[in-house]
Length: 361
Image (cartoon, rainbow, N blue to C red; front, top):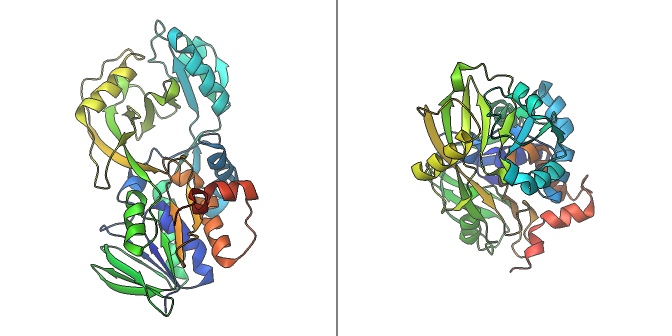
């Protein structure tokens, strides 16, 4: 007997499944050969409490304690820094206010990232609150919790058909076989609207947006391990240390369709050029590159909760670029709503995240 079917084995599905496991038997269905194959496996893996819309920030704040303490904690210090030219002051001031960073001098900025070009840098802001997230361990721990409660995480189980029968059960057919449960959680990432349509729920206009990343050698042979994540105002590009190398992204948001995304070489080149404008050592080669799909609802808030027009159909979607940092609180909200408990989040935030806000049916 299965109580909950979760469609999607990224961080959204695994965290929701782990929170639901104490309430009944959970089966997570992942289309690919491994969990976290798509966006979750291509995340920038940063926890920054002030990053996102007000509803997202509320989720971040509610997730902080879990990130810091659960299973020994998943965070390690990183810090973040905004850098800007003289003509980018307005955008810099907006980012400084939104992220709550402190303005620092050019000399201080060079102390954090010594390869920055003094002649290009006019403004800089720094915050200590950003942390790296151990994303792989977090996903594996959530999967372990599901299995420890008698549930399962089934890979290679791509959903092909689903419908709710007259007995109130969802029958979900996959490449691995068929599964049945009274509750389905749609945590399908870029495929969330497609899964909704398959189950007879109204799609919400969730759009996957491509973001490309290049991994380059450490500039000038520098030891980058202690550098912060640093980026241009308006998130026009970013760079982040990664195992002795540097990740550089144009931070693009190009609308896409659900698929196994790959980097656009021209877009990636433009992003590297924007990064290159701020640093001295030239980028002479790319070690590797990839892309992920960050899926957003029209209002850019996550979609978490019970579909008001489709019984037993739960949304856990539209995480955008905030999936890992919001996962502890987002999954707790899903479990609270299904269990009929009072959510820890305030009512205004719950409403801002609810699929009912779209008024579709």
